[in-house]
Image (cartoon, rainbow, N blue to C red; front, top):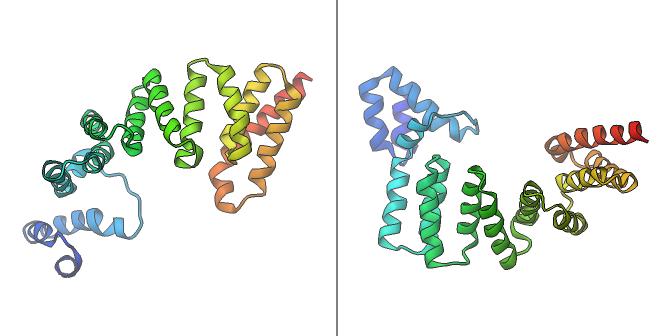
Length: 235
């Protein structure tokens, strides 16, 4: 009864869920609790894909209706983001490409395509789309766009260009991963003095950061410490 009361009073989709609670009784209450109450209590529980599709069906219908009724790039991006969250990657990519047909420089659509191409390991396409993003907005996603571009260059063995961009990036953005990548390049080139300087700065910056940022970046501190030990051993 308590769950029915909560549903009727607070849930905007109460008409849909009320039938579940009435007809399934206790099992329905369990499903409702995990699907509707726990997310609002800030628990992050994995939900199977088939259940996500069912639970977000109305959201999908709204997004598809907006595409048909309004049809601007924004509506296609919203639909693409939703499809990508539901792991419907082919449909998500189609939505992003429709957005780009209407607005070729739409950064969110370009970024959406990048994420899907990256998942499929289509490195050339990732590089091309990222280059377009960075030509429009060099600091896209607070430097994350440029860092992903650099990582893509490294996978494509374009190390000289990647190195020059990393040198520039660490002067603008305090990104531990960028320093780690540059340190690895220096070690590969036997530039141990430069590698040591970069890696020590990485470690000091992480250790002196807030608890939140330390927990978020301690993996890079550990990797940097291991690299410094390899330099000491080889010296």
